[in-house]
Image 1 (tube, helix red, strand yellow):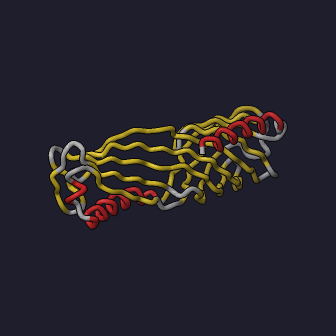
Image 2 (cartoon, rainbow, N blue to C red):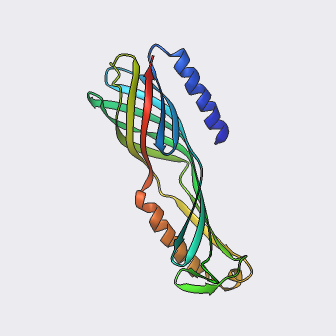
Image 3 (tube, one colour):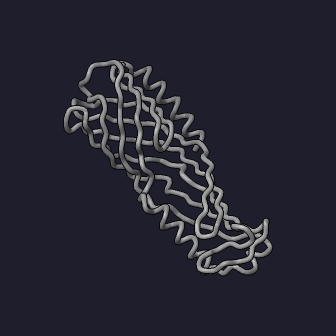
Length: 217
């Protein structure tokens, strides 16, 4: 995914330089991270866009149901959009995103015990619950936004995107360590994973909430 992002980044920059008479370069921030993109008007109401975004590596921790979780989230994304300007600078957007979107959660004992599923187990410092969350590589996208319509004159502008890349994450996990490996049932692990799955599926995908600065050549 990293070589693909780097290649696309270079292509977007070159595309802005070689197609300077027609397109927009934009740089933004929000979810899912920092974004660099290029937009090319097709006619007075339609624009095609491509961009790359990255959230980098975000570390966090939380406590849930007697388990202390350390987490790391990674989101890298390549996106292809079509914009339909329905009224002035307001548009509807549809497209596809190609993602490397995943999270690693490591659950450890809250004190000397850990609750997994419906049961509480004795756990030592080397015992943990390891969870992986991964979104699909390719996801459809629908959204709305505001920006420079295709017929607008060149110069600077601002663009706003609100939308969702739709996809159900895959949640997997297992316990490790001298105590938990010998005592925790698979049924309790599955119940704990179901609880985490319910949390991450509430969003129905990966949201996009971003503001970008545009320059039209």
